Length: 105
Image (cartoon, rainbow, N blue to C red):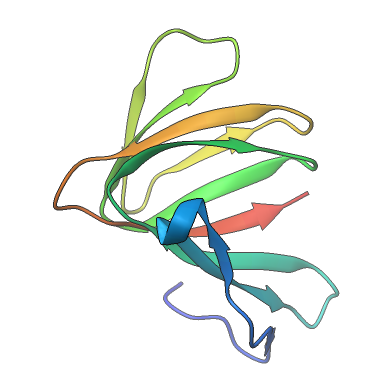
């Protein structure tokens, strides 16, 4: 699916890590929420409250989940899951950008 229909979008952007990650929260008619964003070249650590599914829309990243030593690569059309109350490291290579949809819960 290339778009979300009938949603409400928060006007203010979520800006993390000095602008290396920027997203907008969208609210769907069923009451669920997602964020749609981009991560610019960097290596960042995100903490989770609720479980998350990160869906790649464009670009590529490497991910290491909390407690793991190996990195896995994900691109457009691929997803990875992060447990709630956990964290993950994500790396986007220089010259790249990783566009994503984060599904909460």
